[in-house]
Length: 212
Image (cartoon, rainbow, N blue to C red; front, side):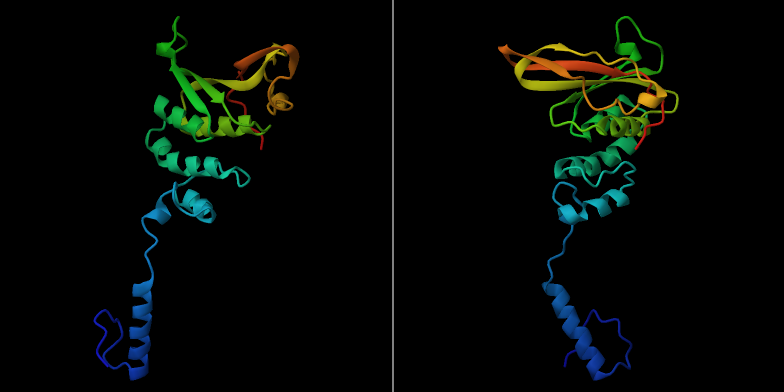
């Protein structure tokens, strides 16, 4: 039996040990290496996403989220950490939840806003759950710098009939951070149709601790 060139066995190994080493070596050569696709959040198996998220230091993870959000969260995690404290990191934080971001720093606003403040707008084009706003707050809080303050505006796009009126949501207090539901309730009319409409409401008390 020929010596297995990649063997790590000592010179005094028995013939059986050498045969097992050679056999296992041949089996390993048949296995297709899982890399680099295994480490790619867009191609890795869905079951591996939580482990990849832990490897990349993802702090806000929702096991009940859909596959698309999970892959976005992992894919954007390093960009957010590398660019933390910049408008780009805030934009990625919004994108990681599947929302469309629109970030305006204080110096981009007219008139100029207070220094070190940001207007973070998240355009929601998917179904909305009551816990999404708290998760968005936590992700933005992790992406911004310590000195910055942000106002988060949620824009919910409704496709279909045009809502005639909406109930405005008051500024949040510490006990109302859960928003008591999700978006403002709508009163719909059966007479008008539209391709879509945007509704706005703002989370003013940004620095309040988000509830789970």
